[in-house]
Image 1 (spheres, rainbow, N blue to C red):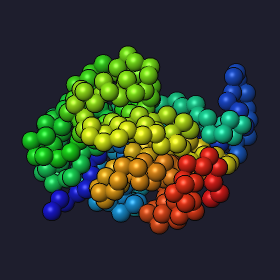
Image 2: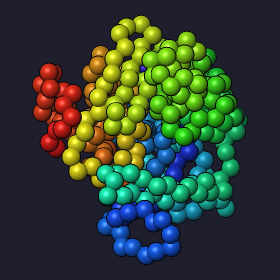
Image 3: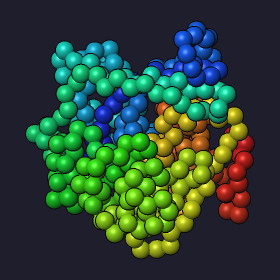
Image 4: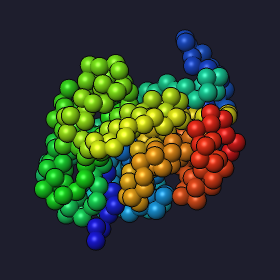
Length: 317
């Protein structure tokens, strides 16, 4: 039996998220409506989502020995994520993202990112036994040398590889990772830049032919498109809840919930609906992790609608 359901490798951050009336266009002072400080990062938030749903998870990362690193580690531990493979770099600072969320534009964001001074993990830092004991390895290309080594270890051990291609995060070297991914969930922006094709169906076909068994293309409120290597492709509309507070982390929550559904052996249509519901519930709170639902909350949400109504554009919470 696998020790972990999913092991993630990526960069964990501290997110300082502030709800404002509008984005400043010039020098000014305005009073915020709300503010929160919490952990963040694409892979890290997906791993926290999985843990909250009941999966056995671990995170591989390097953090600083500053207050940010303490917050990152502490939140992982409170959420039930194994931190045995998070290395501490003495005298270095951890990554921080300052996120402004506009209440005027239903969760639109402006992000300023400070990478910190923590060095990247090397290929020698990869915990081989942890990856070999997992069902899925989840990566997004951060800690590049370590990421490539982790993929090699996973492939040799028969561990499935999940790749997260986020919006505005495409780099040419990602072409070295996608062919080895079994599960490839990417933003439309990433898919278009990777394939040089603006048609989603054509882009997905190119991605599938490059190697993955499953390709999912996400596009926020326009939902997601699911393309299995074998089976019928389909579109999953997003659940558009009223009074969206913040869309930070919704894509990462979708990733985590989708992987959870795969671990449970659910039908793809059910998995996509489950992941979309989890992301929608998260949008009702400030910050990428404040609204991550547990399994009962997602199931209760989905129980509100019948199969013929599950793609309704407006639902009550």
